[in-house]
Length: 158
Image 1 (cartoon, one colour):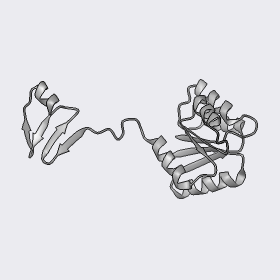
Image 2 (cartoon, one colour):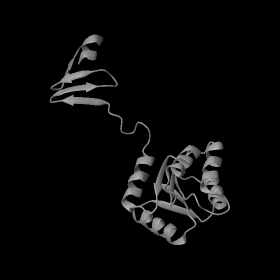
Image 3 (cartoon, one colour):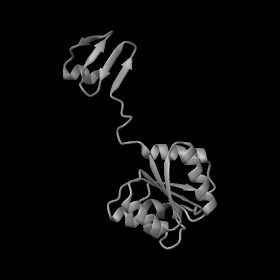
Image 4 (cartoon, one colour):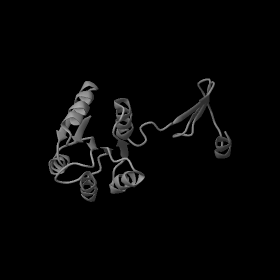
């Protein structure tokens, strides 16, 4: 997974970058909004970690611009701005998640994992109770490995 960090505070960017690399992520970084936009628009990234208060183009404007250009990769706002108004502005601009500084790195990792899940990747397709198995996709029912023929109404009741 390739992550783009757009953060102007060098120590914070280096800390995040080092931690993500230790976790096996590929990481690119930009220290201002214009450079971040250029990287987001021209390179394949799976996720953007975006500070709101970056120079040359603030994070809210950058997020809106990416969304207006149909760039759909997940965006995690990571910022010191913590009011409800700030959070609403970030999410309404198109961010998928919002985390305030200071933050626990473990929580950042959990949010990255959550944002990187593909829709439906963890959808339940089978229900099981003891040796009874219902396949929700094919509507087949088995008990102890033997298929049971049910009517539609019987299946719905089950």
